[in-house]
Image (cartoon, rainbow, N blue to C red):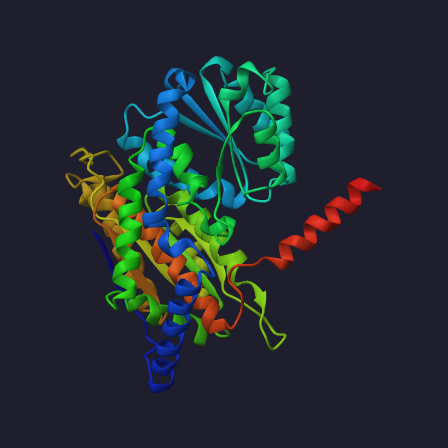
Length: 418
């Protein structure tokens, strides 16, 4: 289960309530017209899981592999990486997942050196099929490991892309297995498409349960049972000029990659020019508690009052490590925590930080995850995707395009074609 609560100072008035009603009607329209296809992935992607299981039976190489290498960047890797980071401690026999994302020569070299060709499945992911970082790294992988993609090694490669993209055509040409991304699901919303479901299923995760959690959240939302999402979107967008930044404090290390996924989803979806020609959006900031409360918290407490703060906390870490009942000379004042679990310590720090921030008149909300479970991950993903869509509607922007990113790609192309 996931529990949502807010400690917003802001209140809804009749104007905002009217805005909520209008925005709900528009998101229903988006779903019904297929403007974005992520709403139905909880059901639609079940077919992908069946396809993957069938392919695993016919591809003996997959059974022999112990590593899944994902070659992708941004929306092609962040969501998948987030789920792997959250779940891997629960799956003793899951295949190792390795992510080749950034063309950083130091990082890339170290990761490539850790790969054993004979035990590795390579999954190349690019919605457009021409993502320059991804295809460049893919070329290096083919050359470094002497992969005979035209023949014997074609079973070691899987492509995930749009139908009829250049990467899809390449895969078809050489008999490489490819999975399609729905045309109406953008990269940053695509983790529950083949982008995430294929490599995560191959790695050994129970992706059906993840999809079930996502489907359940969507069903509850459109039945009017998750109206807190509408309220949060209305308050954040209405007060965006005074508080343009939303800070997430995730109180579990396994959520670090999830916060990075949120930053991309929020930033790329909401940083736009609206229909009136004005620059608008909400700035995402992702942190890990309790580590970052020893640095960024000072800015929140006594810096500009231009932020809202969302806490994501894990109720039960399920490990039961206690602070030893040990007294150390000169360090006696730390003994008040002796005998308590580390779970209680980090939970107490989260509550204390939340209370201290609230007392400063800063708007705060809390997402509490009872335990790390697959369905909770699916629900949390859909919570943020729905929130993003609603904020886009209320900001009067297209949350699904990224014209600012495209400009940078064009400039890069021009630089290397000179």
